[in-house]
Length: 242
Image (cartoon, rainbow, N blue to C red; front, side, top):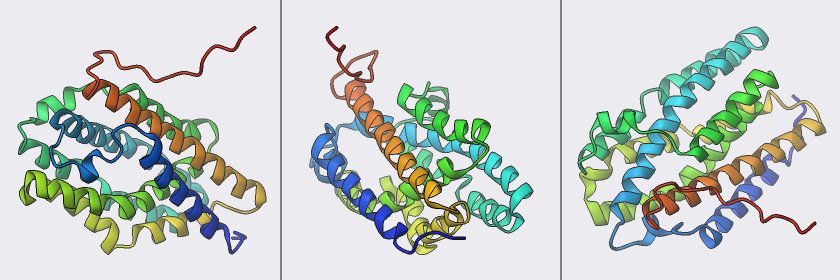
């Protein structure tokens, strides 16, 4: 492992800049963090998409374990244990949704948003065509870092608005990440995949791609649930003048 000693510091600084940018540029970004009156449709669909994303990530995690069984069985065991910890966390969010009238049948019959498909597809692409879990594990580090630095505040506000019992599942999910130092664990696994400066550049590239996909998700979520667009569309760049 030849990861430069300041790589994590640089990565964490990038993620801090993403959090700042998210709150400043994404519509409704502060809603769950600050709103005294919750847009319930936004809240419901966000949690549904979280569940659908977790379910699809399980498949990619299995591909990562398969990769490590061939290249590094120590990391295969470690990632299998991590996946075991996270495997059924969709049930935690489903329990919260049940308290606001969303059934499991509704959750699991919902077609994922395009942005959700793009995000999970990006991770699977890395496994299938780049034959590396680096995109996946970079994404997991992104999620673990950002979650532990944003979600406690979101849940404090949601608890004030909805009541403690309504965020019990989401709170358990975040507490697992905090109590088990998941960001440190994921970093250690990711470091085993980084052998030179090119790999370090690839990590930064993945971070930027993943953040772009996350922003698209929240834009699409806002369009669908707040603006009421029945066929929400991810905004595309304007056509250049010829």
